[in-house]
Image (cartoon, rainbow, N blue to C red):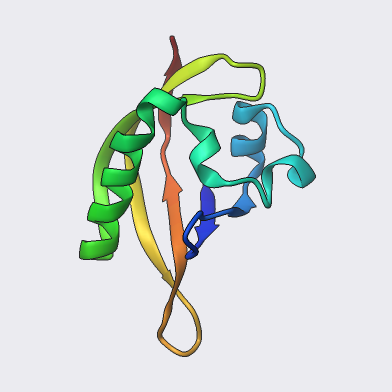
Length: 105
């Protein structure tokens, strides 16, 4: 699971142990990093569209896309779920995503 804040260039605010292992980063390297950097540059438009869809609907199920680890290795995530995060005042504060299926390219 990953989560990013709700800014003009969202930064990761959370990554669980499985995400840290998959992206081959430590907590201090992952958290604070612009979340767009989890995907290769050529795949970022598709990623942004999925995040936009999730934002409009507050959730999106079934997203698949290519990601890239810290060493430049590419992998595909399958059937990801993306949802909106809300603060205590009912304001959007970010998005989270989870997936259980992935494979190396």
